[in-house]
Length: 429
Ligand code: ADP
Image 1 (spheres, rainbow, N blue to C red):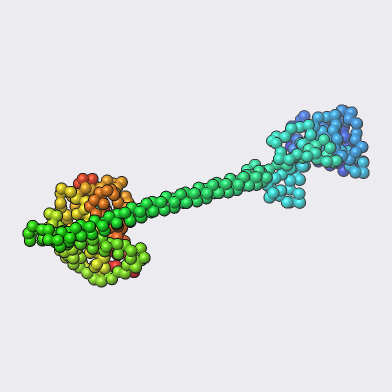
Image 2 (cartoon, rainbow, N blue to C red):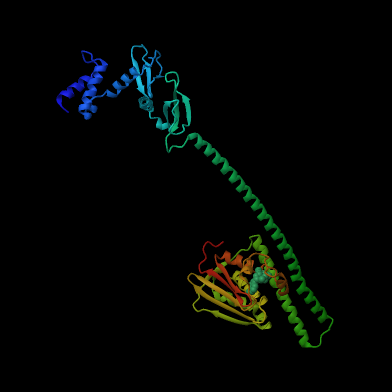
């Protein structure tokens, strides 16, 4: 820009310049400069204001006497008189909006902290977006409305609070219902368990009665027969005595199991943990069933691996485990009378396996066999003599040794029960 117009621009920008320049002359000169050099606009600060003032005068708007904002005949131009009444201020709508926007930060306090801001607009205009709250701007800005907005991204705190409240109610209800459901479920399960236990106990009493009565009745019959001398010869006497011995044995086993069970129930089974060789346990158990094996024509295959380590265990307890497993193998075998015993060491465990080729079980039937009183087939168990305690006792003893028990079985092919006992007992009680 040339030096002369720059100087002229300075004069035109200076409203205190003396001699005073009349408004029409100032505006004329401004436009002359702009016609020659449109780029001079940035050096002429008040062209728009002069234009608005001139348009205002031409519009013949009645000049307001109030010091509150009022419309002019020009669209988007507002007038307001200063308090002492000697100056008339003209504002475009945009300028007013900008000024009010500026109030967002009164005295440097950023309203954003509260998550909202205020916008203003002439009442007849519509909002760019719906404000959360709208009110008229008051006496100084009649015909103007103020709107309260929340910053984009900030949640409307009222809606958020309401939502939070709703969420709390919802969760309270869900948790309440869930708690009730769980409670009802627990009560239901408890009742079902109680009913099952009662039924099992009743069955147990029936089984026990039967189990005790049968050998007692047959022993009595046999002794009566012998006492009355109703026998053919010595061989028959011997046969009868053998039968009595067998029944007696069965009864003793049964009573042993009852006693173990009752001690177990009262947590009274005190184990005597000592170093013992696995072969010792197996031999003691076999000795106890030896007669039965030969009497019933079973083949017993014993496989004790060499160099088995000694274990710390309750000898009698583990003998009871094996006897119970043998007993089941006898009871649940039919034509294939074969029992296998395999003892081997596996890492820090000694494993005792008892296998039979009997009736076996399906996967479903195997599920509860370690539970007390549980019998897969009650009629069969009653026929062969059982009261559903054997395996629960086995499991109790194995658990007390910190051991494991597992079973594999297939219907009509047989079963394999595996008992693993740790070589060194940890924290035994
Ligand atoms: P029980 O006195 O009835 O034999 P157990 O607790 O010893 O009770 O066994 C539970 C059930 O597991 C038995 O009723 C039987 O159905 C099944 N069972 C146990 N051992 C065998 C096996 N070797 N072969 C097939 N079924 C078995």
